[in-house]
Amino acid sequence: MQKAASNTRKTITVSHSAIRHFFARLHSLVTAVAAGISVALTVLTAGAAATAITSKYGHFGVKLVNKRDFGDDRYGYGMICEN
Image 1: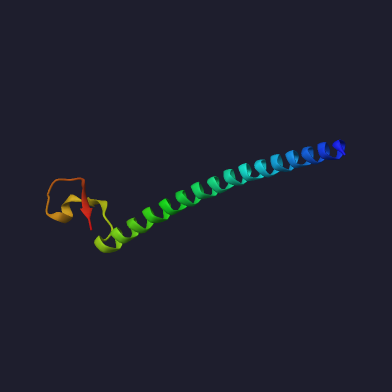
Image 2: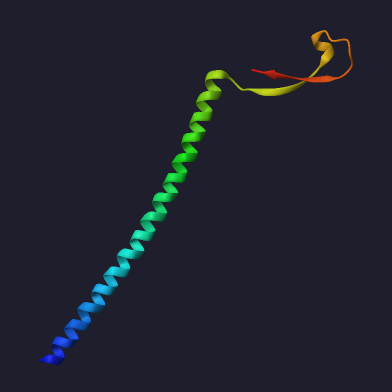
């Protein structure tokens, strides 16, 4: 009878240990997935904000132009901000 009780205790201990390790691994997996989702949402939010700003105000850039096109008699090129 004591041997059966001892085996039962060992089985319960092993089962508890397996369940504990399973939940520890599951917690790690959930944490990794949550971190990945957080990064993805940050990238999407930044992209959406950049798209919204660009569509509202237009594309801002620098353009290389010939100075003579703007009435400057000097030879060469200059840069202007274009909208």
